[in-house]
Image 1 (spheres, rainbow, N blue to C red):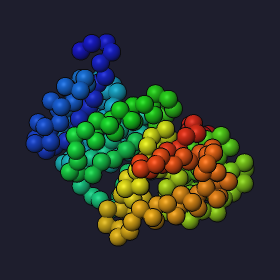
Image 2: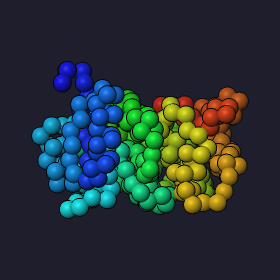
Image 3: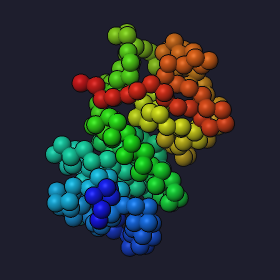
Image 4: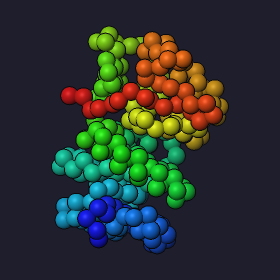
Length: 239
């Protein structure tokens, strides 16, 4: 392994997943370590200090979410992507609240996984502590408190609907990334939610009114024609 090569820990008990992903990740420039359960993953994290972790949720002995909880309680903030077969928004929101940097629903395209890996690595380098594991996020004079589910702008509390809060939370934990309307639908409303992209636009408009954010000259949320939205202001964990 070269000094500049990043180490990735792949944690999954499904041999077919491991056999397909491990060579792809190696070809993409990562030094890949393998673990088949949470206990083995924690041991390798302690001994090898990987740069990023891709971990399945459903595993024997210790599942991925419990492994992640133990990591965060031990102040191990290695960027972690969870792989799950559960498509409901509540399950994914819980995973993020417990400290996951991102999640991907099975089945997924390998190139999407690679894009998510590089994105969480960029965020970790720029923010230090993972944004997805931070209880409070700050951007200019905007504070988002994930524990109380409240948002403050210039120290004034904003009255947001729960869905608007969740959209803002997702955008702030993925700053400087193009986020499609479809991705927001999957992440905030869930795969099963029978709605269209107009619903996303409605919540974005609600956020812009609350944030006094001009769509033509935005401070926070910029529209990308044909792509979706991007949170353009810098975001960092807040005390």
